[in-house]
Image (cartoon, rainbow, N blue to C red; front, top):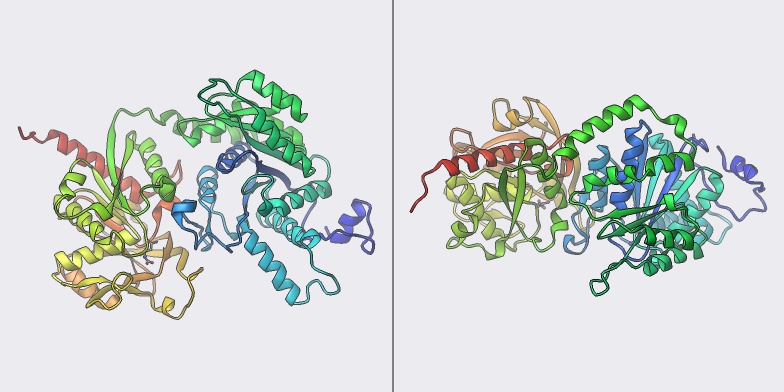
Length: 581
Ligand code: GLN
């Protein structure tokens, strides 16, 4: 549909209009519907979890869904954000560095997303400014309304065309009332108006307080939050009430009456043990049918598809938290104070645990506090060790100690990105006797830079978006642990985010010393997976990639599956050992 067609539909002429509604080629109005999820009262309520859970209910019914997260910050992407402040940086297959919510979408919907599923204020504004310089708006003074808002609508419709989705799920970052997201809200309001009846569902996520001193749920903050939304011209169709406990009928009633939203569409989204239980919680309250009705898409449901999808999901959720077995995996990192910095690792552990029937418990260790004298004390009780990704020198010597312990004591080890590089340094120093081996990231003038900056990165200046990013092919060496983990696949795809790599000059020495590089770039000498032969160590493997990013509930990532299996075996053998008295 062209801009003119749309204007005609809504009864306006091109010359007289204040509308700015660029349309992507091939857009068909009515084909794609929109669910827009907004936050009130406070941020961090789990808009992404709500949005992806609702999307999953429709996806299970055979509808095609596509999520998008719209962030309120001015950074072009999440790559330069500190995980301490913002949670982990989640890298997509096309190399886009995004917010950790995109991980929730990929996991719950089992989809590989791309830059089309993510935007920031920075992206939107710099796009508009670039277009202005190129003469894209000649004759007009460029304004937030209509131009920036117009670009936001375009981004949403482009996603509709690209994904051919039945429903696009839009998550607006932050809370209603923030300056940062006001133009997103206005864009969504306009979009709903232009698309017409039954095209758009607005969901307000809110919070029902339960102050300890009162011991009862209070709805006032929720009411005020929603009032704020109505002030900008948006009447929500659904209100999802986050709360510590199931929201009482009386409280829902109050919220319903105050907001004109019928009771059946004021739902409780209280805390549960696992986010994977949220889809069922929403279905039990009839949310799936409500959304289908509001969007007029009951006829797009495929019942057989739903039966199959639900049976598979049932198998997974029924096993969550049910196992009697336990393993403890140490994660040694810099951001251990903030679990969000390692969200995908925790999720990958959960996926494997559920699939293998074991509770995977993580023990968080700050490696700045680890030294040769205390490593046994700190790691003596764990069944597996992960050294995760990271940047900068802090805590690296402690990581080396952890890896040495894992290697010598035959504790299952998985190195992720930096954990792969540290394993190379540890092996070079302690087995190949290359004293002074290090990474130029930590010691620029080091004597033996076994880890050095990638040649292609040397030319790039500035710190934003300059890493080797995204999904890349990895060639697997046959008859190795890696080959076993990936069912003898010759080529696999993993996601990367790094600037440094193994310096190819040291590969022969490391291999002669017994280290096996079992995954490589198909054409360049970039080492992607290392391991020790299983005759030497039951499970010692590392990858330059971030496999935690691609683990899914029903398809746990093979590196993690291997680690958890090995940890179970290790725990079993340890139990069988005679205990020292
Ligand atoms: N700092 C290392 C590099 O840039 C590792 C990066 C990471 O762990 N993501 O190569």
